[in-house]
Image (cartoon, rainbow, N blue to C red; front, side, top):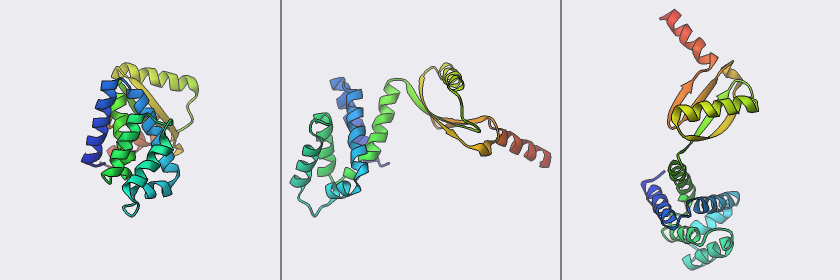
Length: 176
């Protein structure tokens, strides 16, 4: 992610705050980024200096009018005009981080040795929310090589409670 992507995303978020449309802008930007990602040729078209800028801007406006907030479309047009349309995905990721932080929500990944059932997921969510005093959006993954337990990744921290890690630690102590 570039400094420029961060600046653009922060500017869009500030505008969203002013208009009290943080969630609406997020969903619009996400929908547009997903649509662009599905058709790589479209991104190439929007980024191509060989195509006049007014054609690229018109194509953006026509494609997303009524599909995304008009300020988000203007934001995309600005990215296109400045030759930075390829940074739309970085802008989305940064904007999402700002949006979630403003709502006191963190993302987490839970990698467990086996599939967790709904009650286990609920219990883990409650423990995380009580420990960190915030809400969590959790993505769950299974990695049988962990042998047991789980690894939790959130806010740049990794909590490794896997059996595999405990066995590795015990091995190091015995060899040490």
